[in-house]
Amino acid sequence: MTVSLSTTIGNFTFDNCFMNAAGVHCYSKEELLDIYQSNAGSFVTKTATLEPREGNPLPRYADTSLGSINSMGLPNLGLDYYLTFLEELEQSSTTKPTFLSLTGLSSQETHQLLNIVNQSSFQGLIELNLSCPNVPGKPQVAYDFETTNHLLAEVFTYFTKPLGIKLPPYFDIVHFDQAAAIFNQYPLVFVNCINSIGNGLVIEDESVLIRPKHGFGGLGGQYVKPTALANVHAFYQRLNPSIQIIGTGGVINGRDAFEHILCGASMVQIGTTLHKEGIPAFQRLSQELREIMVQKGYESIDDFRGELKYFA
Image (cartoon, rainbow, N blue to C red):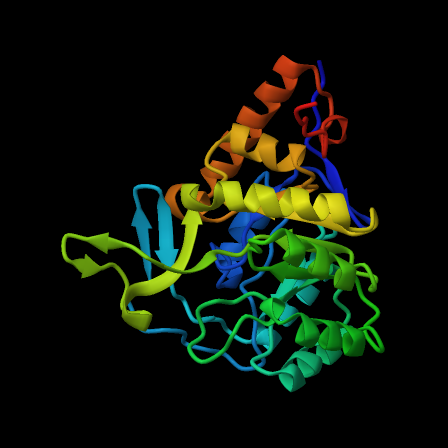
């Protein structure tokens, strides 16, 4: 039985449905090339701001028994670094479409970033991160529906390249309804669910694990899988079919990835697991997912994507 993990997002085809999550193994060109040359279907860059940022003070990431906690503060090498790298990569190779992640520290900066990308030669997908929970003094844009709607309305007056958005977790059914009603107004190519669950607190002995914000940080790993699955499926139920979903959160093994796809995800991003295991995680997860598909008689991920069963 031939099993394929290929998938599509918009007009782009990927040989494998796995990729990294923004923030993990994507800070430098070298790290991005590691993923590009692996069997992962694609990579996404570190979320870029207009100028390079050092991010929050160390230690700002810690592995835990059930996942991770971080308060990175958007450390990155700046939009020009990642955009130049992607343009050069496209000139030398066209084997894998890639994702450029970006966010502005203000709406004006967001428009400046997107205008630069819009005028560039980059031919891949763009992820606008509306969900960074770890920049002190900066709220998550996607929790403010009025601001989100206004921003997207302005963006789509000029932006012509394939654009998706990275979302924080939502926790209320009415918020799924309200968010989807906004997103469905615009020609988004994808939504990415979810970023970390913001402002958790993990304690070891009598101390916090990270320095920024007195130990408060975003949770990843096993902690977040139920919330991630709920967000993936809630938006799969509500969004226009043209807006696809990237599932992110709590993927430790092939079964976790299977569940993300079952809930409606077209691609699956790996964060904490990639940080803990490195590049070999892609091979392991791919093999485990294929084994599940063979057991269940599925030849492609489209055979079961979104086919979550409910009680009668």
